[in-house]
Length: 353
Image 1 (tube, rainbow, N blue to C red):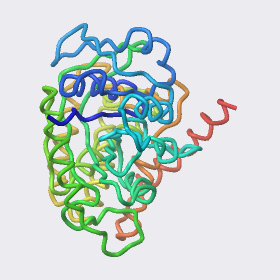
Image 2 (cartoon, rainbow, N blue to C red):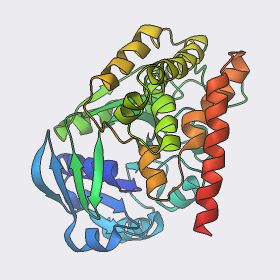
Image 3 (cartoon, rainbow, N blue to C red):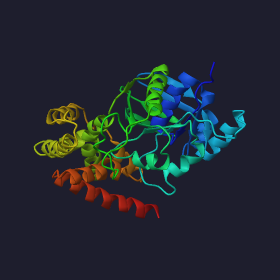
Image 4 (cartoon, rainbow, N blue to C red):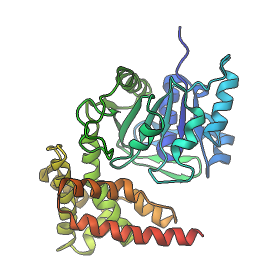
């Protein structure tokens, strides 16, 4: 029998910790490595504790905790009896936020990448894949959209509520990638290795008792989630308010403003070839928010602002705005939100100095 796959999770916060538990059910804790930063000490000592509305409470998972991909690669090499001294990671999963960094995330994970490694991106936004494709052109890349409302309430302790679903696809997709930020007119088709990796990874997630759906073109799912992310995230961050609080603050006007932003996102998605991102879907998402009791949901950008952290401005708003400009779609509200978010981001960066 072949050994179980070995997996590295880079950026193990709330999402990464939940998938560390899921994947440990499929391959065993000793085959799951987790790169941690602020939660390193507690995770190294006692692993992660997960309280989930789906999987159960007081779940504990103890992956191999490391500070960097380079450290993970060193441990993997010395424990795999590998004569060629090549780090053995079948999957490197990125659950860190899609924020530009120095050194870049591709540079940070490079020590753990070998020819057999599949890179899995569980990140928000549009156009986040190309930097990985440029850095590792021969490696299969999977692009994923996650619905998993989870919060790290204290270092190493995660609360997960009632939704859990991972949508998986290759990058490039099986169909023309009209939303790519690449300058090439005809993106390459995915290799058979990438398609096989997508199928196998989908099976791994399901073997860990989680939900996974494999798509021919994952970009349609990215635009679907962006409908919510590019509207609620900026509005909540800029107002320091949760979604229900915004709607309650100006009942006569707030719904119309949010609807208008969603319709701009839908117009861009439809121009990019994703007709299912429709005004009706925008109305459905707005209705879900209106049905929530106060105070409502705290999106990631709001949590980042309150925590003094950088936001995924480009991934969630900037890249969508660039696609809109390239397709000739008028998006004045997205442009306004992008300007204001960049100003707010600058204040956060100044506060860090």
